[in-house]
Image (cartoon, rainbow, N blue to C red):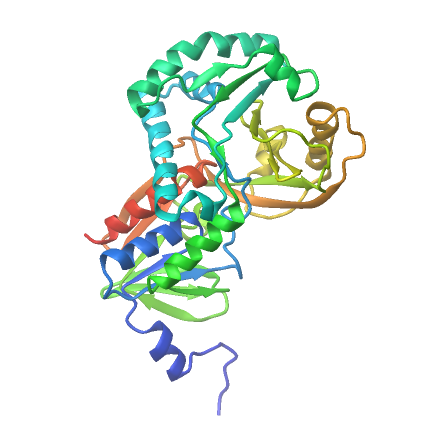
Length: 384
């Protein structure tokens, strides 16, 4: 009798858990969980499952900094300078803002640890700072036009800047409408709501192949299992090209550190630096700091998790020279990395690539803000 080492499902496993799947959502991040949750809310009789490669959501959703942001001054100006139209840039900012509102409405501020402390962009270059300050009136008019918000940006006074006791900072511009949240609480609540709606989540499922058949979609795992569903929605963001190589989304690694508690930390808030390539915030009495991938951009276009000594050294140097120059005894307690989904455009890819296969990826580093809307829109796309 011949033998095979390939895993097979028992009758009970197939019949109980994997039979007659209406929609399989690939990825249990912010987008995937919102999509699956919305599918069950709108179609309670559908069998909706999520296949997730990690034992926790694997990518950026549980690894981000928890910034509830939609656009700093320098980032928006850079987008405009790259040839994007005013309509493109500020319509996207509006979608991010509305996504944050939708997220807060669905789950509640207290449940996700939301704090409306605003977000500040700090500058150490006088020329760059003056250029951005000059543009504040124009950007405020555009924010009013597209988001309905008045006086979003303002220049902090010298006294306000000095109160932070940062290093050689020449100025700070505040966005009052942004905030910060607890990434762990956010994902815990999304997992809870999706499961309570009837969504089944299967972790440790490593897919490498999607094949559309006449009566559904066949999914093959690295372990040799063959699964099937009537329709699938790919929400793996930075890992999407592994399943659909033609998608215009690239993985990008971001590295993050967090300090031990700092007893005399006096400020609360979230901060951007160098067009958002660096970012830091308080988490209680700790400081979380991330970024630096622009220093080694091509190398950091990778879907491999990991830490590099050069970027880690830069982050530690920023902590000691820019953020807390008066405290030389800062200790890092934890370090990690996450994988973003980026592209030449920051507009998410939200489309059907066939009648049975949909895609909702490329959050552009703004998944906390826009992920809820993209997930819900991805779900609506699967109803057709």
